[in-house]
Length: 249
Length: 309
Picture 1 (cartoon, one colour):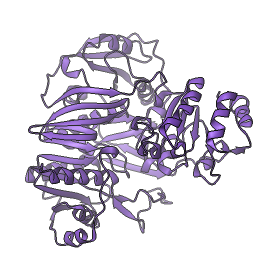
Picture 2 (cartoon, one colour):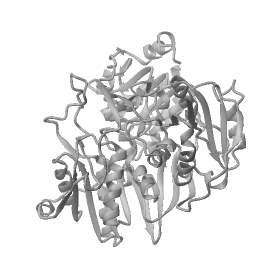
Picture 3 (cartoon, rainbow over the protein chains, first blue to last red):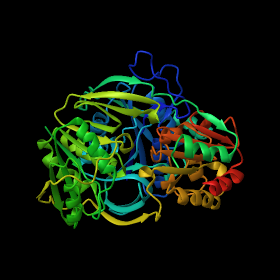
Picture 4 (spheres, helix red, strand yellow):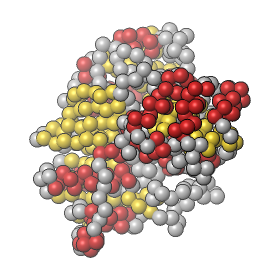
C-alpha cells in the first residue's frame, strides 16, 4: 500500500501572529514557518504504519509558495520516501486543495490518505472531508486511533462527548487529531539523506484545477483585546467580588 | 430565500448547539427549515418543530442515519441543497465532520466556525486560533456554514409549531459503520454549554487533585475543564480540554486554577464573561486576561474557596 500525506507550511505555532496594518491579512514576511503540527502527526502515523509492514511507500504533497518544498523536506527527513510539490499562492481554499489532491490521488492511487484535521492558520477543518467526498471514499475524522486490517480501517474518533469507534472501508481518508502520536525528530543522517530524495513538481493548471479563490477576503482584524482586571488579596475578597460585584455566583 | 439548519441530536433529544445555530440562521433571515436525520428520531422531529423560528421540519428516519455517518448523511443533504440559499450546522465535531463533505458534493466552499453574521453573504470567523478575525464574503448562490455556538445566544425551545415532512432515505452507502461510543459519564453540565466552568492546569500536579475542583464545580453547578498541559500530563481525559485544540467555551464565569495561560488555552476561553485566575506565579500570562486574579498556592486557596462559597 502507498500512503499519501498532504503537508502544509504555516506560521510556527509558537509565533505570536500579527495582523497587517492594512487589514489585508496576517504578517508572513520574516516570520518563522513550520509544518502544520497536525500534518506532522499524520506523517508520523504513516511512518509507523510503514515500519509495522503495513505500507511500502509514503508520498508527501504540499501545495503553496516555493518554500513549501522545505516543508516536504522536513517530512522526508522524518522518513517519508518522496515528495510532490504543486506551486500555488499561500491562500488556496480547502475546496481547491481537495481538488488538487484528488488529481494527485488519481495519478498515484494510494490506499490511504492521512491528513491533519486542520491547518492552524485558516483553522478551516475541511480539506480531508472534502477530498473524501470528491473521491467517493469513506472518511475517519479526528482520529486518535487507527488500525488497518485488510479492507477495513478501525478508527477511534475524538468527538465532543468522548470517543467514537467506527469501521470504514479502504481506501479511505483519515484526518488525525492531537493525541494519535508524538511525532519524531529528524536525525542528522536522515536530514542528509532527505536532501537526495526526489520532489516532483506538478502544475495546478495541468491538473485541470482552478485555484482562484471563491470567497472574497474583506478584511482581517485583531480581536478586541481583553483588559487585565484586578488582583485580589485573599479568597474572602475573591468570593465577595464574585458575589457582589460580578454577581456570577 | 430558505435556510436549512441541520439538527444535531442523539435520536433522543436536540443538542443545544443547534439552538445557537438557529439563532445565527435567524440573523441571516429567511424561511427556516430544520433537517432531522436519524433512526427512530420521531421525538427529535417533534422537539425540532417546537423550536422558536422553525418553519418546517424535514425528517429522514432510517437506519443508515442512526449514527451521523457522514458518508450517508452528506448525499441526503446535498440532494436537497438546491432548495436553499444557506445550509448551517453547529461547529461541533458533528458539524465539522459532515459539512465539508456536503460542501464538496455541492461544489461550494465552506465558511467554518462563524462568530458574526454581517449580511446574508458576509461572515466573520476566527483564524489563527482566534488571534485574528477574518471577514469573508461569498459570491455563491449556496453558502455552507458552520456556526460557533458560543458566539450566538440560543433560541427558545418552545414557540414553534412547524409541520413535519418525511424525507425518503438515500440508502446506506456501505462505506462506513458505527461500532461503539465511549462517552464520559458525568452528572455535571456539558463544558460548552455550562454557565460556569472550573478548569485546572499543570499546576494541579496530579489527576487525583481534580477532586478539589469537582467539589467546587458541584457547589456551583459548573462543568470541569482542563488545559492541554493537564490533558497531556494524563491528569484528565482529552474531552476536558479547553483551547485551540480542544473546546471553545464562553461561560458567565471561568475559573482557571493552576493554568499559566498559553496562547492555545486563551483561544478557548477568552470570550468568557468573567475570568478568575488562581496561580502562585504572579507573572503567569493568565493574569493579563483575568478580571480577578489571586496569587496564591492553589492547594490552600481552592479548599478555602470551596468553604466560602
